Amino acid sequence: MRKLFACLVVVVTIVISANAQEFHAAFGFGTITAPSASTNSNGSFPSLSGGLYPSFSGIVILGHHIGFGGNVAWRASRSIYAGSSGNFGILAPVRPIFYDFDGVYSRTFEKKAGVDLMAGIGGEDLRFYTPFFNCGTFSGCTNYVSSNHFAGHFGAGVRYYFWGHAFIRPEAHYYVIHNNNEYNGVNAARFTISIGYSFLPGF
View 1 (spheres, rainbow, N blue to C red):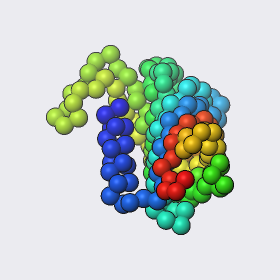
View 2: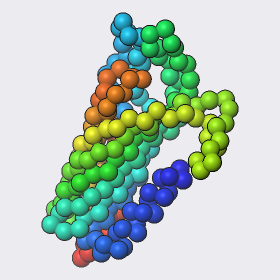
View 3: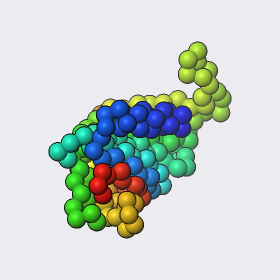
């Protein structure tokens, strides 16, 4: 959560310094869908599907409806990972975290609706929890081991302003995950409903 807070501070600082024309911030809840579990000659691979994923997102529009943004979503509760590779099996609590940084096209229509289209890069952080703590000089102490994977990201959302600058946004995100060896399949989709607020000059 400290990293998440640091990212939000950076985004707000950039917004202020860049004199952005628009800034949309939102918090949401959703879930992940991915290919079903499978077993083959290389081992057994569970599915990444399921679970409740809270998320934070921010979009900064600099001009001509073009800007940048980011998302972070994490599984609210740990699931039990039960997979194997060859003769080596793993049974451990795990929490997937998805994050991305995007170029964004965002437009608001008639003060009641808007659309956000995004594409960029990010990653999947799989946190496997252990019964003991690992301590590092700069990282502090943690009770998990991370398996990180690079990911491409595509997303879209439709904003509906239900009260002033406050909006509700159904959204969909698609992750193309590189070397997602722990799970069956390299791709995953996240579907979310977010509630947010827009800072729009003259809105």
